[in-house]
Length: 217
Image 1 (spheres, rainbow, N blue to C red):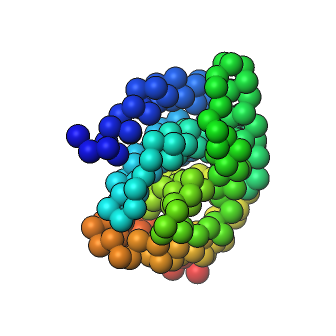
Image 2: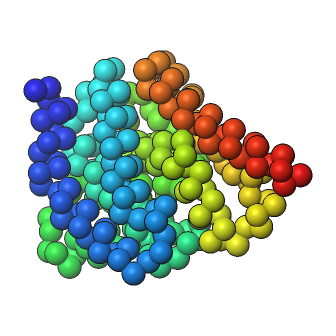
């Protein structure tokens, strides 16, 4: 077993079940299926995919793995309090309170984890090839869940919850979608397996909203 696989297994055995169950409980009475606990789990799966890709060119240590797991399972929990674009602040508070209430030892880089949770939706991110950051990995993993048919559902639900007019929906989505993909392309174009896999998923979402735009026009 590779060191990264071992680190992921260790982190999941330690944290995944309690964090996932806590996240699931938060969404019990909330009707936001596109961003509920299942979304958080998918983002962690994408984060692992990114970590394995980055591990081809740089060493990924256990602290980064654990940090990305925590950030993935908390980043959108703020939607249980607000659906606006500043939900990251609420997510940060929920994560911080969880560690306090459970009397858990906080990782040494806990502030960096909280910052990644708070800022994950800013979409003004850069991934340093030499020192991958929690924020960049979380942002890219979250973006990967915006592609494909699940992305269609995610975009539609959250934009309508924010009061976007159905006629404005496709144009606004396409702007946001292309911004996400441009960052992904700039970051991972030199990793063809990962890039080509998710480019095809991006195109599914893009074509759906381009067709919808034609109908609304």
